Image 1 (cartoon, helix red, strand yellow):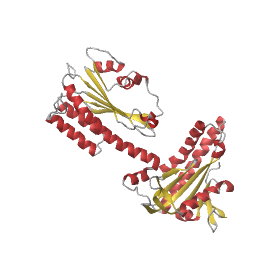
Image 2 (cartoon, one colour):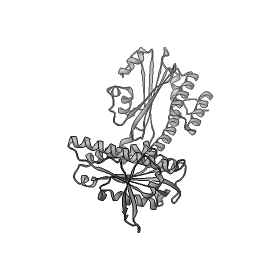
Image 3 (cartoon, one colour):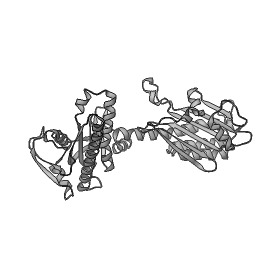
Image 4 (spheres, helix red, strand yellow):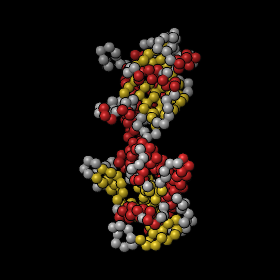
Length: 414
């Protein structure tokens, strides 16, 4: 069986290609994939001592990650690289950077005897007894629309291989080169699944993302759920938006939203969407009692208010503007699923309880209260260590009858 007119693929190589294909189909973890590939290369007579894989990814926090395999210790090193981290100087002096900047598909360097190009990391390799080095770059062909490729132009993998064989890789290097495209394809398959899961969770929330990826994508497909509902909004944002440069405004908004999101998630809530300078979150009752989820919502709300208060003190000390946080909590049945047009959908909650919660939050400023809870929520909370204070009955926009509203006594003052 021929792979092309120059190279004949062996049955042993075909077995490895089939193994890689199966791993791609079952979404094998990339560390397991790298280790299995390296071990099988050695079994095929490719004298690999060190195998390394670096890849960029699409993740709100991570720029990329790398894995290193060693013949004596397996996967010996795993590193992640954050967007906020600056590239270390050694990266700019590395063969991988040289490969990327030069637009090269591969790089083969003998370590002993020393040849050009040479890099500082090669001194470490020589000290470890390595004799030959090979690197290959495989792009993922992510997008063809150049308007959107600036941030992901490096999406793909760089894999590097080193040996301690006295004569280097020699002829087995041809075998490695024949097998690498299938290895890269298997890595890409797993990477794209991971990217899809990560991006969906970042933009939809983890539960909504899981539902969409399970196939809940048809418009109108929804289920009725009971949940504690949280509406949160930053008071004063509109005024700041008219006076503050957009980049500074966005950085400030992100810090405030983090003060709200983290407590919600720490208490098991799900942020469904951001509403400009606020958010909508739920604490679903499935597998939980109403008292448990209402308690979690209160804890999240109080903690969010405390964190915003601390952030405001920090801003005041620096002479920066501050914003107040208003929160409304309700309890009720909602429709959870797909709404929108035929081709543009949102996965969210709708229903009278959601609308009522939004109307409650709108009363915070006029009542000079940062946290309002409904009568239904109060009943769901049951006997609790929190002391509720009755705010009287108030009309909510769009509702005929006035509603009894409450606040929590221990809510921190702005």
